[in-house]
Image (cartoon, rainbow, N blue to C red; front, side, top):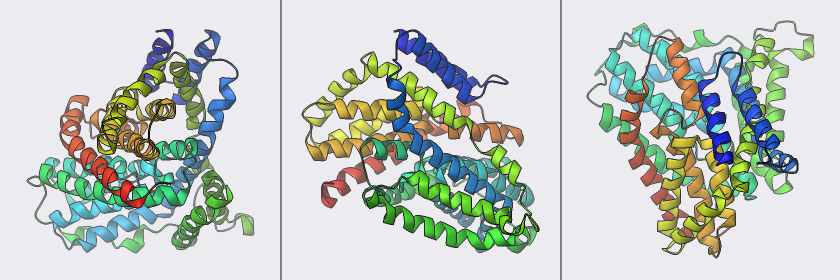
Length: 437
């Protein structure tokens, strides 16, 4: 009960974010209380840091890359192209925006995609003078797709990195399993959002109201380097994974290269366009403290026996066959994520899977990926399910677009279950076909 009380209070402060106390300091304070009360021991600190450090620094590097490309005008340029490719047809613009969100999520993680795509889409909606109902459809689509399509690569979500490292899943193996599953999730996302919002979408809009995409480019050098750098990074993930190179090393190298180009370090800073200090200050450094602090608090729940109880439940699911194990684990992880946030939930689920007795290898591997899917998609049930959603709501409020928790859950509880079920069913079919790791 003490471990749970510390976790609950810590989570309240993380969600509340009192002025002057960021998510990192709130989580670290909770870890300090857990340490002082004996819920965790000093020996747990290096264990937890070994679990989270790679994911944490990968995430920071990805956000730095995202911010640099955003400052260069890369994402605004892409959004304007999509606005023109739609040819003034609002019902074509809607799926194209979702596809853009899915592509951004795959390479820049769900948090980066949701924070960068939402303001750009909002600006375009204002320029096109869409009605409130139509604007809401696009806004919700941006928020939903950032989580529902954050499955394909290890780097697409912090949850993915933590799980891949904990179970020693290579970058290539993870992609082989989850890229097809993500395509199913994307198709289900498109279908569900279309069915839910089809009546609100505008039939047409004036393409003339959009400026030429080239006018969005602010730093030509960084803009031109974007595609080559991303392509090399993607290849490097696959090439270096068998050598034991952590994804944070590759991502950090990519971020360093773009920083060097943006800062014109080779010419002493002459001709620099992007404010490097602003980008570095805007990086989510609090996530470093949050990852260590929150996972230490969660580790206290493990020490108190929560994961043992969950492990028995997973063993029971495993006894009913691979399909039941995958779908049951995924929905359990989703519900847990929606109540206690997906970052702590993925570790709780992963530790429970490790501890579950007498699971066949295929069933255990299915549960590992199902836990990831549940923790990636499950947060869409409630506003507190993920930090990405909380940040998204904050961005919307700053832009004058307020979505109440009740209104959010009304949508989330309708559109999330079918997408989650489709993704888990695809996993249950695809992984046995692909074969064991």
